[in-house]
Length: 180
View 1 (tube, rainbow, N blue to C red):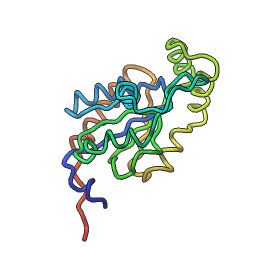
View 2: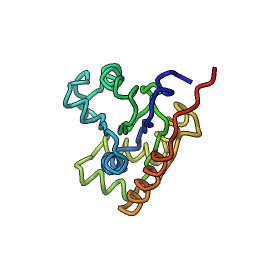
View 3: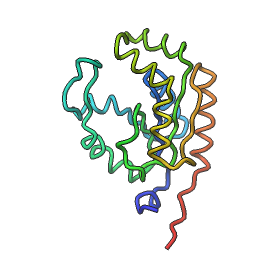
């Protein structure tokens, strides 16, 4: 068990999922309900310039993963954070006590993404990512299976249920006992 995880008195939760699955909406509501800090990595990248430029093909910033991790390190060691981002494989495993993967039915996701103006390769890539459960597999490869929690996120009822479930989990969380 790493020292940073054992010193925390509040857990850290990573919320992932394909763009359009409701990560930011749910994370904001959860942060309010559980009195935790919310870091939207996409916003952080834009606000603090934690990127290596713009990808014209996918119409997004190319994040600098090292800069993002450096920016978050101190807060993550303190605990009490909800981090929302569509990927997970570059975050240190020791940071998170729970990894939530939001999943949305393809027809719902398609409507959400097209209403955001996604088209072409960006739309196709994201829909395929959800169809093939790429992010769920990425989380399962990057984190211990017992901390990965897939949740449906198709409508307001799902989001409300998820916030309630996760708030209860956070309120019942206890730091792991450090063994010698």
